[in-house]
Image (cartoon, rainbow, N blue to C red; front, side, top):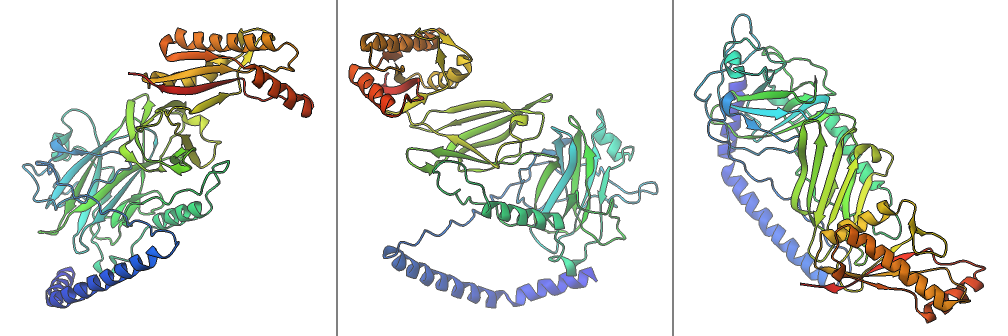
Length: 483
């Protein structure tokens, strides 16, 4: 029945090619007219610009020898691999062959490719496979790496797969089989964007980000599936996830029983309780979100794992797992770079948006400091001033070309202006000394206290406001850039 379906489908495609070509030509012409009309309207209209279409995924060539277990392709979690070219043959070795004791394996590898993935944290392994052509018949097996001579043990059927999906695909239901979890996930993401929380202050609305193409899995392994295994006698697409532990390694062998078939896209993830905020970078002065050169590292017992590495990151959701440390490093010309280390526990109670402010390195840019304290009528720093100043220390360390002024303010009623002027200057020198002690070149830093006019204005304002003074204790002002 399946062969008849494929034959009819191929015949229909061949017969309809000429008609389809004409239809496509008409569509293209129609689209061109529409675009021209839109441009005319746009020139005399203030309507918002149309959102950019999502870019098509880049084609990936399967590496040579990836048909064999020894040359399995390493996958990164949550990152789609593909669309690939079609697997061709079984490689040099037929590792998977069914026998009487293992009847639910491939009867043999037809057109296979091997993948492997290292597990960075505990959870449930999920696999999404999107076929490039509906008439292909993909099956897959999942093995846990048993260590030395693993591929030989697979070949001898001494290692049994931990997950099996070799069902005979029902072609008539090809486009109807969509996981409920995928639908729910898409609906939830859409709803969360509509009801996205305000990110504070007078910030503009959250940007509409370009998403990946809408690809629904053809076969796979998900938490919401019910079948623990799909054999050759069954019709189905999805099997239930398996629990995995940090440090384990798994191999996935994907086999296309259809010769001269097409490729696929595979995505592997570990389902776990996680915090997935929308990570954005914002220029407060320009009142706009900016793209940055971003790197986010996850640090755990197994070492470092890059979560994001993008030279033109425009924003998106990032998955942070409880109990791990993370490092965020972002840079952009004309701005101070951001270097932030934190533990995921610090994020769980925060909002669904993680917003980083990009501060400009231009002359005149200022950074007011409120949470810093001195001994009464003295220039001695007290309290947890290190944690307050360390943020600025990292900024200036990463930009040795930037010079700045430290200016301090005191609460003054103008009774002894000269003494208050001197005290504010001495406090500025104390902060400069802290920066110098922590590695900043003294030649980059100048100091200033309050002027007589500033003290008069502060005293007048305080008297009018019944004793209220400004909360700003110090200010760091960019004075220019050196060599």
